[in-house]
Each structure stands twice: as structure tokens, then as C-alpha cells.
Amino acid sequence: QVTLRESGPALVRPRQTLTLTCTFSGFSLSAFGMCVSWIRQPPGKALEWLARIDWDDDKYYRTSLKTRLTISKDTSKNQVVLAMTNMDPLDTGTYYCALVRHPQNLIYPWGQGTLVTVSS
Amino acid sequence: EMVLTQSPGTLYLSPGERATLSCRTSQSVDNNYLTWYQQKPGQAPRLLIYSVSSRATGIPARFSGSGSGTDFTLTISRLEPEDFAVYYCQHYDNSLYTFGQGTKLEIK
Picture 1 (cartoon, rainbow over the protein chains, first blue to last red):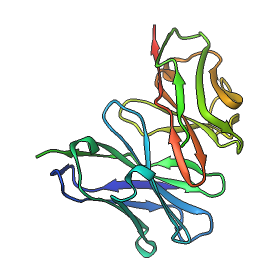
Picture 2: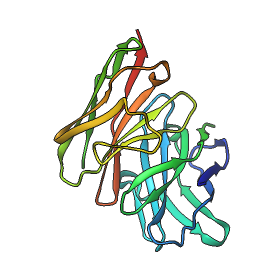
Picture 3: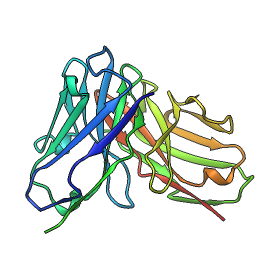
């Protein structure tokens, strides 16, 4: 059974860097075709894909946030880390990580999400 | 960059009725990567339909997807009380993922 769980700070100050960790089980991120994505959702708003890291360490980012995002993986720990710099109150929302299987490219299953509030 | 526009924003229906949700893309979807998710309050999205019309594992037959080109539809044939939620369409192309703004299905 595949499970993913997000962890990180609930509160971040403006201009700080947010670091979130996705800890997963039930698959290996070194196996062909396995990828992990991060998606966020501002309160009451739509989903927004942020980044993806692949089994071969290829990385992809949302175009509008590319300069602020860094995704990395630690295969031995079954973890994926997302860093987002220069946080702003508009970045407040629930951040999800999810498994993506290549080549179907379906975002499924998702973690439960973690709420991040950006406020001074 | 692809834009997905969902309509209506909110749909008011009663249990037992048929729901038709629309997703229009700004460019033709030529790779069949059109997906639908359901999201209930406080929960992560749940995969419903992938490749335009394929139901995900465990999804009831009352859910169906259709469409081509730039116009896609999610149909729920007879609404059950648990179907009232927000539905998102999503497209994948060239290593980028785009979501629509969602349609909220509310009980009338």
C-alpha cells in the first residue's frame, strides 16, 4: 500500500524559506517510472502543481515559481524535500505531496496535506 | 501555457439527478492526458477518471468521462449524497500539470 505524509512548519514568516518533507512508503523512488510531485491549494481555492522529481533525478517546476523552488530526494530515507524561498502571505495554503507514475502521469495517491500559514 | 476552464462554478442538484460538469481547455488535448479528481472538505483529492474516460480503481460506474479536442465532460448519472464535493479537471503535457478552477456540486 502506497502512503505519503507531508511534514514541516505550520507557520512561516514572510521572506523566510519554507522546507517541507514528504515521507513515503510502499514504493521506491529509485524504481523506473516513479516520481513524486508537490501540489498546493490556497484556502478555498484551486489546486496548483508546483514541482516533480523523477526516479532518475530529473526535476520539473511550475514555470511561474521556478526561481523559488528546489525539489530533492533522499532515496535511502524514502523522502522528498521541497524548498520554497522568499515566502509571502499569498503562499499560504495546504501543501500536498503525491506519487506520480510515469508514463501514465496520474497524480495518485496523495498525502493528507499540511497547512502552511505565512504571517508575521 | 494551457488553461483549463470549468463550468459551472457551482452546480445545485438533488440526489438522484444527473450531473454534467464541463472542462474546456485553451488548446487541443492531443495526448489524452485529461483527468478528473473529486475533493471533499478537509480531504486530499481523489482520482476519478483518467485518459478522458477511464474510471480509476474503485470508482462507481455512475461516474463517466467523455470529450475530445478542447471540450470534456464529467457525468454523474444519478447523484448519491456522498457525491456532493468539488471536482477538478487536470491536464498533463510536457512535464507540466495544469488544474481547472473546480466545480462545486452542492445539494439543492
